[in-house]
Image (cartoon, rainbow, N blue to C red; front, side, top):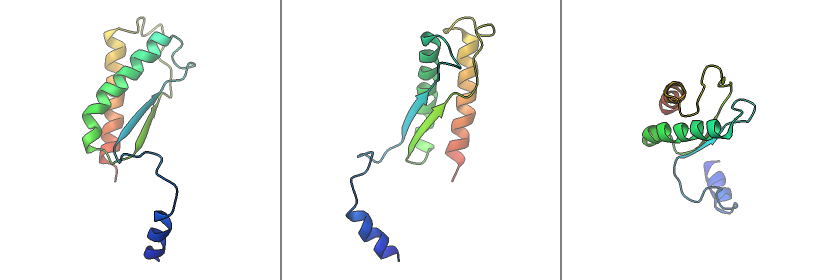
Length: 102
C-alpha cells in the first residue's frame, strides 16, 4: 500500500512551497486592530518573536491570526511598550505550544 502512495505522489503536481522549510504568515483583521499602524506593529512582533522558534518548529506553513481586539483605550499607541509586551507574550506562548506539538 505505501509503495502505491509513493508512486502516485511522484506523478502529482509540484509542491505548493518549492523549498521545504518553516514558513510564518501573520493575519491581523481590521476589525480587531482598527489602525493600520497597529496592525503593522502587531505583524512585526509576530515575525520577530516567531523567528526565535522556527528552528524548533516542524517544517510547515504556519499562520498566526489575531482573534481578539487590542483596545485603543488600553493600548493608546501602536508603538507603546504595553502593546509590544502583550503581543510578544501571546506569540511566545503560541510558538512554544507549536514547537512542542508532535
